[in-house]
Length: 272
Image (cartoon, rainbow, N blue to C red; front, top):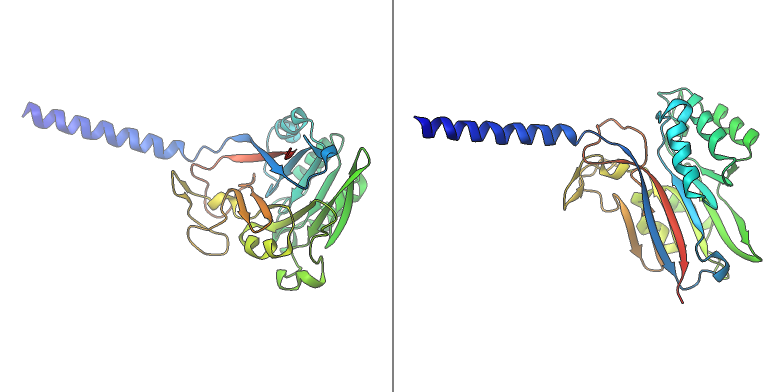
């Protein structure tokens, strides 16, 4: 009888540990994800160039008036900040997005492309765009701009969410082979398409890291309705392109599990 009781106790303890671990998985703290990326064609003047990516913010609150998030960005001393869509959505007011922009536009130049939620009915997109204009945020609506440093130039391009990737050829076109090219495009699941256009580095989000992340397997749910999405999270390479797929900051219909909220810091390096 004592052996049976001992076995039950062990079983209950194991179950309790599993339940606790399962519940802890729903804790999704804010963290900084760092990548060091190396390229042959990066101008030497951009060696060590630091890029912050903020994606899928969804007006999530990180401290009073976004103070925790802003402090994290400020500590990295970035050269530019990229907002890769879904900064506002239909479920929230524009307030937290305003606090965020007010806090980061003094840190470095900020660039923005739309995600799907900016265009949903009820999203305060027009208000957000007005704030962008007021604070000097550059909105890349199917266009490219030069980024200069010490006399050298790279190109930064942004693909608007409404622009079908099927028509990208007539909108942004192929990357300019005379430059190092960065593309901001919200939907990471389209990487196989972006890679056809030879952009050296792509910044994307949209997939929230697969929402539920299983150790050694990856994300479970794709925002396109698929399971185990291919480009769920991290760094991916295809042809001449490399993509950063961010898990983002905000919430989705399915709660995050084992999936921290992240700000991405990419440091560029010139291959010697």
